Length: 356
Ligand SMILES: Cc1cc2nc3c(=O)[nH]c(=O)nc-3n(C[C@H](O)[C@H](O)[C@H](O)COP(=O)(O)O)c2cc1C
Image 1 (tube, protein in one colour):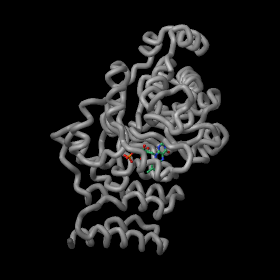
Image 2 (image 1 turned 90 degrees about the vertical axis):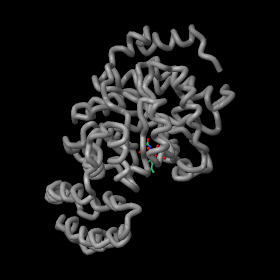
Image 3 (image 1 turned 180 degrees about the vertical axis):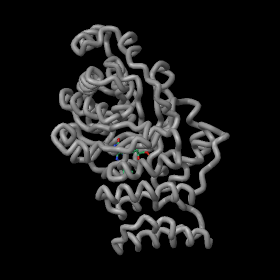
Image 4 (image 1 turned 45 degrees about the horizontal axis):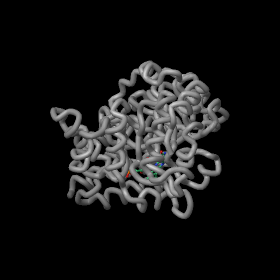
């Protein structure tokens, strides 16, 4: 399926983006995207992000996906509040109604987020029934309208996170790359200059979200092909990046890499990434120092009503792979289960890892 000049021009006229190059130049994007932490529902909440920030001074952290209607009609402070130490932090939105997304983006900017990202990669049934997430890859014109509306309402960058394709492929596309290219072409013309690409197909029927992060094969080659065809766009590669060697291999080809599960399961990886790829002179923080720095934050959050258990869940991976990690995790879980509200448990836990 080819995008003929006249169709594209008519479409650009409709959304008010008459000259893509000029239009795109308006949005100066100065965020450092070399290392990003992926949006992860039920994981990358504000407490998780604060903790990850202690391990990585500059990674661009993404919120969990928050739906536009929830922001427009729900408890904004609860949904969007965050600590200034988390900057730079991007708000990921779910939705497909241009007006509602524009309003949610505006509210996000008001709260101080550094970027608004639209989720076009989540394959869950719930998300599909709301007509957003990965199924939007079949409707690039609608995504372009959403992007244009959001760009009109904020000054911060508006970006998109997508897959390489969806299965079944929408009619008229011969292969995954044809869909990816068309999607990017149309959405970029509406002013999106940054795409995060999870380098797997999203299978819309028959796979759970978890299986959809594991079973469809990774196709970094297609994202590289996109890079070659759209040299002016910023592209961030996502999916399956779990080692320094992999990142060393891929980062030179892209504007950044986005790390999801490995950042959560083994957060010290973020510190290693920062030292290796951002600042070789930066001294790696000790895990103990990270926990010590976390204590005052945890105390303040508990005073605000947050449960210790919820916060401690996010630190469980800190000693991943090291001796006594399991005993350390068990100690924290037991303390949390007992209903402890004293963040001192973090410091008490150190004797277990010191004994290793
Ligand atoms: C628990 C979990 C929740 C996720 N939630 C979101 C989400 O809210 N928005 C989104 O765009 N992707 C979400 N993802 C997908 C990740 O952002 C990422 O694309 C995927 O995990 C692949 O990267 P990885 O291999 O580094 O984990 C989620 C992934 C996990 C594991």
